[in-house]
Amino acid sequence: MEHAYQHRDRDGQPIDLPVGKIVCIGRNYLDHVRELGNAVPEAPLLFMKPSTAIVGLDAPLRLPEARGSCHHELELAVLIGRRLTGTSPAAAREAIAGYGLALDLTLREVQTELKNKGQPWELAKAFDGACPLSGFVRPEELPEPQAAELELLVNGERRQHGSTAQMMHPILDLIAHISRHFTLLPGDVVLTGTPAGVGPLASGDRLELRLAGRWSWSARVA
Image (cartoon, rainbow, N blue to C red):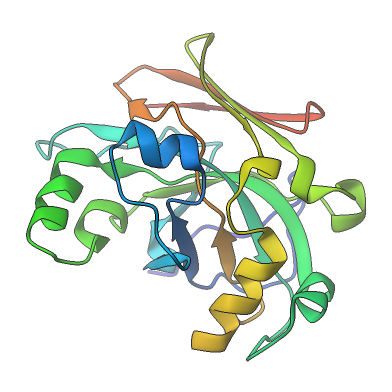
């Protein structure tokens, strides 16, 4: 069966781009690194989610059963609009088709076990529905993406709050770095890391994702 998700703008209108891979950056906010007691990486820490991990925020979010706690990680999502291979930060800017918000859903105990064994994280982060995505705003609507406020409320309580200005590796540098290791294609999405405040989700939770104090999206956990 064809994957039902389609990239959309902030008004819910379809964006004429295919649905590709999700390239994620781990440990890009120092406060989040510290809250989990991780080491600070010297270079951007990359991992991926398949396209089947992407879901919209309009349908209830379904968490895996009997696999331990599932944590929210709020992130700025960058939609790629052009093919990028070995690019520069300046060229990366011209390839951005939009900005949105994503939840990098993570099975925390599974991830901890994988870390302890020195294994990749995909079993904890790449399950179906592991990347809920908002609609995307046009680049010109967010002229200063490196100074954008991110906020997540769960049942009306602020869980995560930060600014992209806190990133250790800036957005354009990240995209250029990724493209030097493998090609980014139109429709791919780059997740740029999460600020502190990650925590577990539960059935019935109601979420509000806010970007730059201007846009917000709601979601509910099934």
